Amino acid sequence: MGPGTLERIVDVARRAGALTRDLQASGPRIARKADHSPVTDADTASERLILAELARLDPSIPVVSEEAGVPPEDVRRAWIRFWLVDPLDGTKEFIQGLPDYTVNIALIERGEPVMGVVGAPAQDVVYYAAKGEGSWRQTGAASPVRIYARPPAPGTPLRIVESRSHPSPELETFLAGLPVAERLAVGSSIKFCRLAEGRADLYPRFGPVMEWDVAAGDCVFRNSSATGVPFHSPLRYGGPDLRIPGFVVGFRPPPPAVVWFTGLSGAGKTTIARVVRDRLLERGSPVELLDGDEIRAVFPTTGFSREQRDSHIRRVGDTAARLERHAVTSLVSLVSPYRASRDFVRGLCRQFVEVYVSTPLDECERRDTKGLYRQARAGEMSQLTGVDDPYEPPADPELTIDTRTMSPEEAADLIVSHLARARQPKEGPG
Image 1 (cartoon, rainbow, N blue to C red):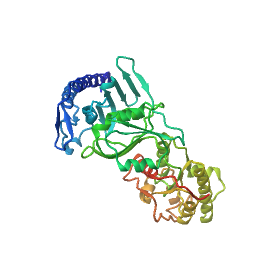
Image 2 (cartoon, rainbow, N blue to C red):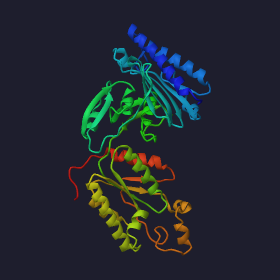
Image 3 (cartoon, one colour):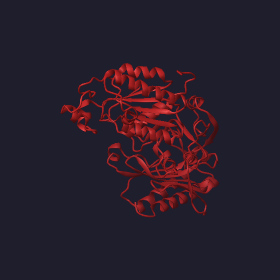
Image 4 (cartoon, rainbow, N blue to C red):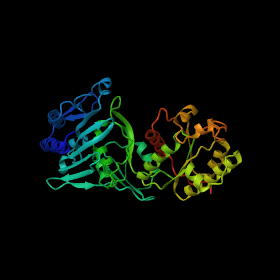
């Protein structure tokens, strides 16, 4: 998109918002869609304006909007980018005369929202963001103000922002396992903006939601980082039916754990562990990465016989368990070829998550990132696991990952989601 595009989209959202505000004041006309959900003349008027302006901006970019219908998946699959529009999010609140409804316009590229505008007409506020350009709030004609999310300090009770119109037993169960300082009931995509401006820490949503409901707000949240590196979000766009089953967005440090990555050399253990580390740091979780090569440098006299490897793994496991008892999540990336050694470490830990990076030998050898397989095949080294030393796969790992079919980012999301579901145990070893 060319320069000035974001400013034009902000203007479109403001104009569409002014229409909805006027129609709310005069009393909206209400109809029912096929699924019995309400739709008003404000929804359709806002959509007409937005679609016309997006067509003027660049008619080559497809648009998916709530009231206009969804093109077939086989058509959408070919799209690299498209607009995702909710002309009036929070219709129930709008009908009730409440102020927390929004106009939402997002630009999606390869499943990611790279531009997002959330207009809150009743409050005369617009939130907007673009990838690499930060997140901003503009009130009326005042100058825009950059906004920042603020991950809570470890151990701090969380401020929860939740749906005003969609309570659920699942939400209550989820929150029962968290230290909660405050619960804010808010309508529409403003919930994402509360995260982005540092007024809330976590937004859990249990139950389906459509992509157009969340894309623009998600973009505002992602780009509200003070470091310039976008925050991670679990949400992706352009799915088969544009339906999202539920999500947890924001900062919820999981309870401390020992995450033990095991697998052959070159399987991708450390690459995944580094992404997991970054994900946890974004959530305010204390974390340490204990990488096999770095640990070997600390204990340079440790050999590679079975007995020496077993002793080494137990020593690293004891270190990781001690960190866990001090509320630090340890990410341990070691070949750790022997099942008994790993099981011994499991017994030391309160929360032990064994991640078997199951990438097979032929693929690891093809990568040969450290040249170890070449040396082993040439007889220049011995005792390389998988070549002349056995590897004992886990019998029942918590997670199994094959990097031939899963990217490091996808694997990290799976691991962090697993950790997020865990509760802090009341008691444990040590």
